[in-house]
Image (tube, rainbow, N blue to C red):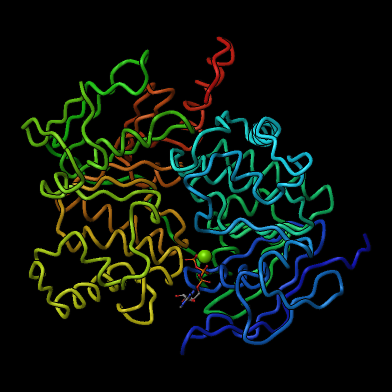
Length: 511
Ligand SMILES: Nc1ncnc2c1ncn2[C@@H]1O[C@H](COP(=O)(O)OP(=O)(O)OP(=O)(O)O)[C@@H](O)[C@H]1O
Ligand SMILES: [Mg+2]
């Protein structure tokens, strides 16, 4: 490999209707470097990724791989040119198994004489997944996995084709620190093997940990590149939003009476019962490693699944049972899933319709007053700074972070009093993350309750009054976080890591 080996976009332009998503963008990733691609929600990162990986054609401009010009008409052509990708949205076949998904791109390696060897395929998939230190059964159907597990399957699949250049579009948005750490270590290894990695992320910490250079897009234009030696939180946030960003440090108001008490929930046959309470005006967080059971707790509390046998939910002192998400909505509970595609949004419907969805009654039942919900949507645009051409834009064509803001807007319009949220700021940019934090803190201050899970320990520390640490289906620690006793990131990380040490000593697997 020569030292000029690189993948470049030259003067790439792309419009959607009247909107220019990319304006004559130049970008170069050298072989053997990790290049972070940054920018606010809607800046054009995913569009650039799609163009450079053959999923979308540019209106004009060139793609150059190791000195050779290309015009990709399909992802397969890009793959043949040595390019691999993990897209921002989930791109797996839900009804196929983990192994089938991972090996889909490299069927030749696991077949003999035209027959697919299921045993070889499963073994291969298990081996690749072991890289992440997780034990997902390769024979499980992908639709039964949670968001983090699915992301790891996608990354594993991309690594399968052994690409020379690998695009990772927000791979860590759904991962907790341990998995993120492993992924960053893996990226580091790929770099030492001479690969070029393009990492799209909103998490500045990751950039400092792993990237050699960072380039930002702003409103579809190239905004600048920093070298590793120039990295700092301030410099990076300035590159992205043009100013430095102030963050919360713990909530400052006091909570009121208990609103929800969840008890008697068992996540595993042998684990003790979960007992969780959330007060009025309180923000409560749950953190845990993959396989700890955090998503199950959130789904039970938010009514996304029927209340399991044995579990008891007291809401404002009354025993309640959820049989469907509508039951929870009726009681003023809003649920935000970490998988927008599967449970959150209807991609082809407009942003305004998606926002109005749980509140249709309010907008006139079956004969919906379009203007009423359009104006409600415009109100949310103000609150969350949603970037769209109009509220009529199909939500599936909004950038990832703007979709997240649409999902949160629903419960603002529905006037819910209790939010259950998985990953509140998943995929949103540093400015919008702060806006969402402001919104949630204000929501609680003005009487609402917020129960959320997060893989972002800084987020937890910044806004939660109390934090439950869950491990292997059990609450193993509870922290109170306030200005007199602020919880630190390392305390939380240690509480999570202590449990892994315990398991390792006892020879228990942490799957
Ligand atoms: N298929 C599409 N149709 C219409 N507009 C689109 C389409 N895809 C993207 N856009 C628009 O192009 C712009 C850039 O979107 P893109 O997804 O590239 O942003 P991004 O930088 O990846 O943002 P995020 O951080 O939120 O993922 C946005 O204004 C978006 O609404
Ligand atoms: Mg994107």
